[in-house]
Image (cartoon, rainbow, N blue to C red; front, side, top):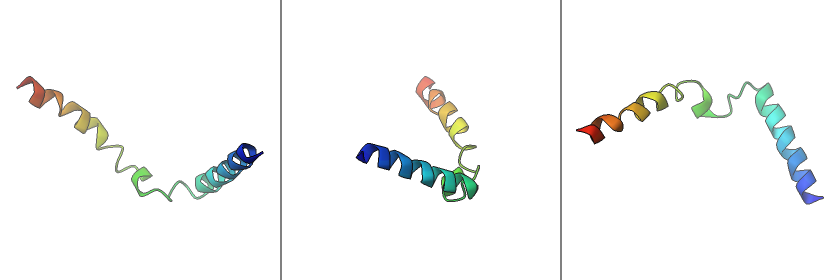
Length: 49
């Protein structure tokens, strides 16, 4: 019963969060996702040297 309640609560929060445009998370603005790609390519460069 508790798991069902938690699942329903999480679903409600997710629905509200999506309705707000995911603006609740600062790292989901689209500025962060652009940084991960270059960061993943940097490690191999120094490792090869």
